[in-house]
Figure 1 (cartoon, rainbow, N blue to C red):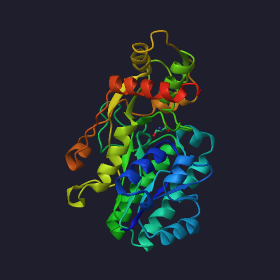
Figure 2: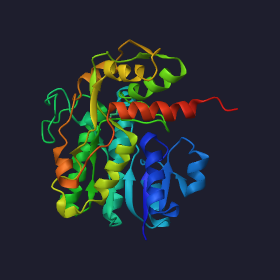
Figure 3: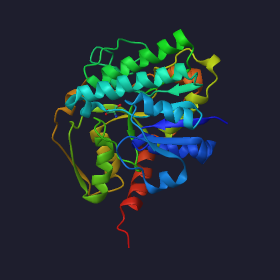
Length: 319
Ligand code: SER
């Protein structure tokens, strides 16, 4: 069997994706690659781990040859808030890094490359509610610009070179194992940590801010399900809307209060408010549902219950 390479494997999604892929395809068949952050002992013990940045084509190519890789999941990305602080870095990692992977895919005739996009591909000109899969893509963040570029590049490499590139537009992803970093939707994770640790949270976007969201188990299922869909069923390739739920921060705080009644939330919007305001409130993901059977499992209530249970266990003082 050929092998899978996960880039950005130490990140929020990459770490849980690597674990799931290893369970599914065997530990030795999934190579985890990180850039700077040390992997957990668990990740290192479970299977191969290598340091490599997506901006270093030679290093990536060496990994592809060394491990006989035929599928890449590109989970490395500079997210929206960091991208606004350092647009040049976002360009390098998200566009040049992706280009390196696509070229490696073409040159080494890889079987498949998975490239997540984001709700950030949309901008203020797109319809804000139930945003369609096909609509105007004019993002106002550097992150969004890099994500639209990635989608177009993925579709181009499929049409022009027959490289099987697939991607989905993730909403905000909520999880308890690895923290997100540098995103606008990070508040939806931080709120749970603070609710458990301090019973209060100060949110950096307004109470009425609504964004599409998804719990990590659905996020992982979505990308693996898309990767495994028969290509004959796909009309889209690198640009599927996917969503699980939409809620305002006020509704999120209320769902936490139902489990932790003392919890209170305050609001001090910063520059991330503008980013959030430029993104959709909700997505129409019928293309993903029709073409590869997308179906999320978690809604806000089920997610909050699970997050609080798992995080309370994780944050419990060790004896
Ligand atoms: N979670 C991402 C961000 O907030 C959106 O894709 O930047």
